Amino acid sequence: MRRSFPRSSYAHYQKYLYKLVEIFAECEDLEDLDGLHHLSSIMKTLSENLLSEQLTCPVLINDVVIIEPIVRDDLIFGVAGILECMHL
Image (cartoon, rainbow, N blue to C red):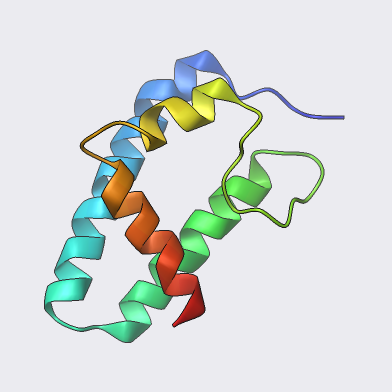
């Protein structure tokens, strides 16, 4: 059974994503692989904790409230970059 993401947390979630992307850019500039791996782990943990059942896909494709901020023009490349670091 899936837990729904509370709409009241949407603004906090979006701010959190912006901060993760900001830190990602700093880690990339500094070539900080440990930091990049930590960010990737945070993104994966965030997605896993938002569902009651664990998914193998780190992005929650079945919850619009989760996807909306991720696919915003100003976040999509940063989020994709963070997820890409899982394979470094």
